[in-house]
Image 1 (spheres, helix red, strand yellow):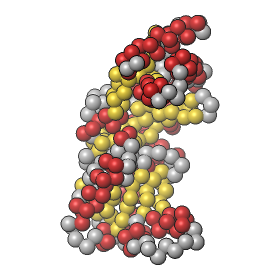
Image 2: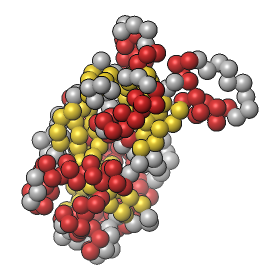
Image 3: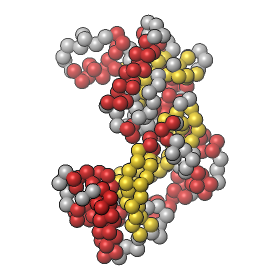
Image 4: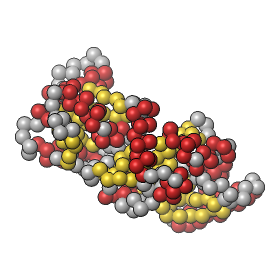
Length: 301
């Protein structure tokens, strides 16, 4: 069975299961594009509720191909996902009331070029080769959490300006989330315990990982001059920033760079990790960035 036949079969089976459970909902197959240009086949639902789950069919098709799951079991699992995705009415409808969700709005960073397909749909502002997007963090059933990128339609419904949205998101970032600065040397030492760590070179001894404590989207801190000034003060230097993912950054003092030509080496290293190790959804940039403590300014190296 190929993917097209699989998708249509699942659509029919899930429709029948939900009808048998007395749920009034239309089920459709759509080809969607999400952040970072990732395209996938999805099962979408249209019912009385404005918020409906979207189920990625690609992963289920892979399980079917690998004989890890029977197609009837997959259909039942998706029907269960649909039913279990809903919160009580008062919980999920808060998304439409800005006053009720304004403390749950945060900023995040995506690469501008590879997200051109979604840029018209979602609110963002450009920052160097990146773009700041905004999301609402909402609870879901079973003590989970989910995020919803803020669209132009949602902003119109809230009747607020992009400037107010930006200010709200960054205020929440500073108040409700906390940056985490981890020494690469301490990380190696902890992981190796009592083992010999004399192999760690001067570069690694002076590198830091900047992330968001107990959370994702830590790369947003590269837009925060206060945090970058703190790192500059710790190292008594300007900074070189390597975007290891959307969730964390590698930061090192610029004095470790013996010549500007080493920027190309750093850029090659970032590209190698991005193309061989990093998941596509976590990609941020192949560029390297320099931060001037004197000018309080970040630029592409």
